Length: 75
Image 1 (cartoon, rainbow, N blue to C red):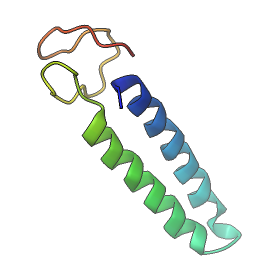
Image 2: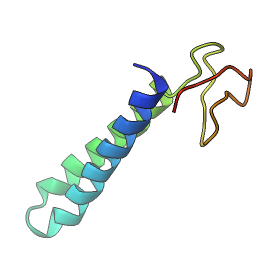
Image 3: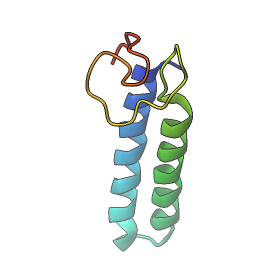
């Protein structure tokens, strides 16, 4: 998985988890599902949102280059 896909998946899972947490008023199981999705989003971000060259985590960078090694990273 490239960093661009990891970033998109992080936002999709995070948003879905947030919506599920808001739906806790409908059924209490939505809280568990929402927390699980949010946790999965964080874990996937930490595992796959990395520079393909030096494997350092890209953090919250918005540029096209790794802040650690300067390698071009497609966002």
